[in-house]
Length: 482
Image 1 (tube, rainbow, N blue to C red):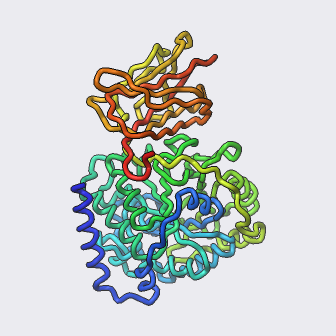
Image 2: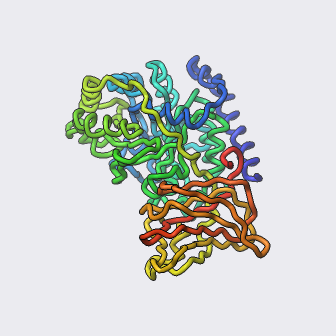
Image 3: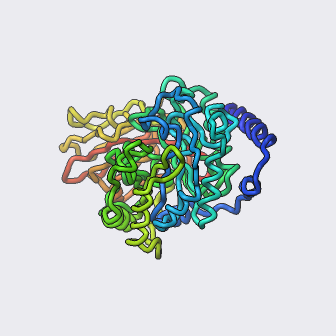
């Protein structure tokens, strides 16, 4: 709460300093004057997102001007100078493919902001270009009837928002930047977040508290979908820390077109990598036929949107070969039509998992699949009961009684369907919930808040060993709790 109050003050000061001195255009004034309409259910927003079918990802930032997608953190702002920047060309290109929305890299991992932020001088305001790219992009896409989404990286190598260096001030900066983006540019349909709880960034949802960020986004724009790119870590069958299951094909993450039932997005570049490289104008791009027949159509049938990346060059223009493949996509595909009815998923988990690292006890287990794996925050390890145990059980032990109102049980092998959960307090076990024929591989259960010293899961016996990858336990606040 203390950090939240400090942040609010800082964010208001940042916003006031920025916009009091701006001589804004009519378009910018309209953006700042945006009023939120009453929010809709998350389920209806997820359905609308799935129905958009195709979006155009736009990787354009300081990495455009160097040879690497992850540049030197001290790459000077003076390199950013798109002398022929034309966001109208971008929007026309997206429209030619019948895309429903765009998604621009407002800030990538190197921390450079392509809007006029008051939070840092590492931004377009310190570059020769000087203009607000986010504003130009948003105006251009809306003018052609498309929705506007933004990409934002939590990892920020320039400002040392990385493991071991994160402070309350780091979190304040993130919140202030998101406040700028979500209050200055009109309705933002989706916020695509990257560089958070992934094996390569290692910034946990405790280092930068996910629930605080999620609730900030929803408080500023209730109808903004939050897409956290974490499918590389979390199971495909549950919405952990995201409204939309988000996959990156270049990182080997692929949604199952046979089994997926969750709202999803799959990102893929037209070129060989995300940001522009000098050989892009003459290097082959992916074929329109493959993009439509092997990606767009099968993904859409699996409740998944294709987010297709193009990379504007150093002048701020999309190269001819990329423009052509987008036009060809539009010739092969007529655009979104109809609606594929989405089954309402469980509300996403957004709260801190208080089970991580806690002690576990279990019934007899196989030696290499021991109790410790239940709370190691690693879904590639598992606990496995010994086949001789008639009713396997596993419990999480807290240091003291904790308030809890939600549990997740990840069982990637689908080894059991019937189970009950109890909690221990004041020297006795109390019933909490019971489930039968729950064939989901990620079981998410919410209940009235109780205080518990231990949580135990009992599994009905089956003719095969019982496995659990992870047990998560949460004290959800607000409207996520049931």
